[in-house]
Amino acid sequence: MTRTAPAPPVRHVHLGLGNFFRAHQAWYTHHAPDAQEWGIAAFTGRSPDLALAMAAQDGLFTLDTRGPDGDAFEVVTSVVEPRAAQDHEAWITRVADPAVAVLTSTVTEAGYVRGADGRPDTARDDVQADLATLREEPTARVRTAPARILAGLMARRHADAGPLTVVPCDNLPDNGAAVRTVVHAMAELVDPTMVGWLEQNVAWVTTMVDRITPEPTDADVDLVRRGTGVEDRAPVVTEPFSEWVLSGSMIAGSPDWAAAGAIVTDDVAPFEARKLGLLNGAHSLLAYAGSVRGHRTVRDAITDDVCRGWVEHWWDEASAHLTLPHEDVAEYRRALLDRFANPAIRHLLAQIAMDGSQKLPVRVLPTLRRERAAGRVPVGAARVLAAWVRHLRGDGAPVRDPRGEELSGLAGGSLDEAVARVLGAMDAALADDVELRGVVVALAREL
Image 1 (cartoon, rainbow, N blue to C red):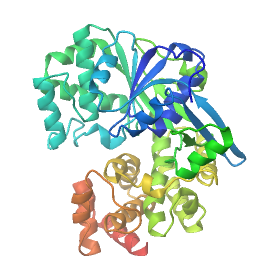
Image 2 (spheres, helix red, strand yellow; image 1 turned 90 degrees about the vertical axis):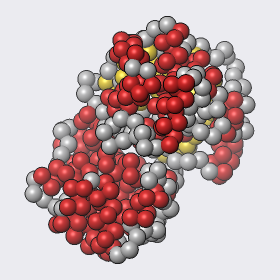
Image 3 (cartoon, rainbow, N blue to C red; image 1 turned 30 degrees about the horizontal axis):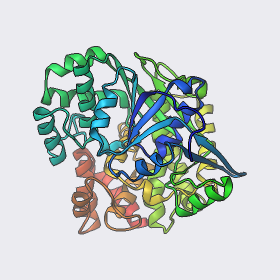
Image 4 (cartoon, rainbow, N blue to C red; image 1 turned 30 degrees about the vertical axis):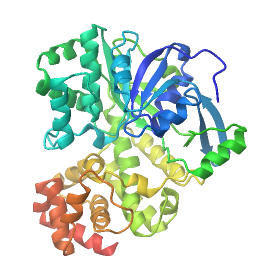
């Protein structure tokens, strides 16, 4: 694959080159009417493999949008500079470029290495190492996402390159403020004079993102080859549905994402709560409970009447605390059932099950706490926790979590003890809630 037209200039830097970014932010930029003004330099989180594969084809890739009626292929042209994480000098150079106006990120919830207080988790060795590196040599390579963002911004300050907007695109509530907090706190620990510059020159936009993007398989690569006649080493598979809601000021400009279908609003929170509770919460439930029941994909699990009943129960609890109109919530639930059951999308439960310790506190616990405050025991929320405990005990999908070793150890022994320890590791108040704990234990046995 090679370009047939000149590449647009780089004015947008992205951290977290991967499938979701390419099916979402890169796709919106590709469809913006001013796309020829907004090339993207996108950097991997860790492995260089994808960057190397995309570089060999001028940053181009095929997006395979799969619906019940078949596949639609398009070549996305907005990524003009795919880069490996190891190319830290290029990262520093690009973020410090006055032509660059936007920095987006997709590094997962766990990637922001936040402690319980929202600041950098300084108990982590990688955070401590990055802090020491930035204090000694700000342009030296760092590894955590907040440190990489801060390193780029420090270089931008040094270059006097002007204002920039940071647009996080991960499933964190109020993600703009959340990432601002962790980066500002890291700046305080590295160079307190940096904080004032950040306040004057960097805007933080809050977003809600939604598009199911499973990991491509060799069969997917072959399907793209047969469907297009082109050898693409880095295709992306996605669903027809896509949503992007943004709130905040793009102080240095941005692509016209609204013209490509994004929603610009004063308040992302209602959309965010709907998505986190209904889509992401149901995904976590299916990932743990569905895999315990022997299912491998979301479609397998949602077509199991038992799993579907569990999802509907959870949705009833979560929906009671949403502020969007009832009709909108009901329509979103109907659309989710269609999306989950899409036979063309093979979304692995093991992929969704990753990083539960980071996901469940924002997907499930808000509903659980509101239900308990109302004097109710939320069986739907409790079932997600019960299935997660079973997952940590070795049932269903494999454990891949930044706290995996710790939590799997806590989940050993008798089920009663395991539930108490795991809940306590999330929130001491949960472990102290005897009634809730008893329901979680009973549901874990039922699974």
